[in-house]
Length: 123
Image 1: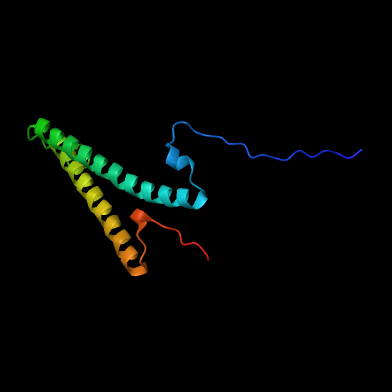
Image 2 (image 1 turned 120 degrees about the vertical axis):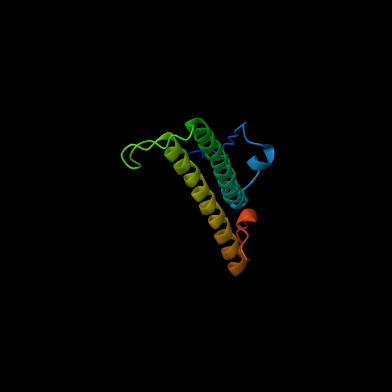
């Protein structure tokens, strides 16, 4: 008696949290969109973190009332801590802008736009 082999149908699993246009993408378009979105989202998150660190440092500076504290290394006062917070925020912004410039420079040299990334297909 011959064995009957049922045809395998791929299961369609959908995530209802994802938009319909994302569900209909194959691997390559999905990866292109994922890379572009991750880079853009990273810059947005970095800018938000910079903003809140700067505001927090400014509030620390205002509430320090000029108290520089005792020894600057062993016992830094609130004013020293506020200055360090603002300095750290500005260094973070400089790093973020440097990364943006490097991405644009590499994109111009290799003619790749990572913000609208496209993976070439073989024909």
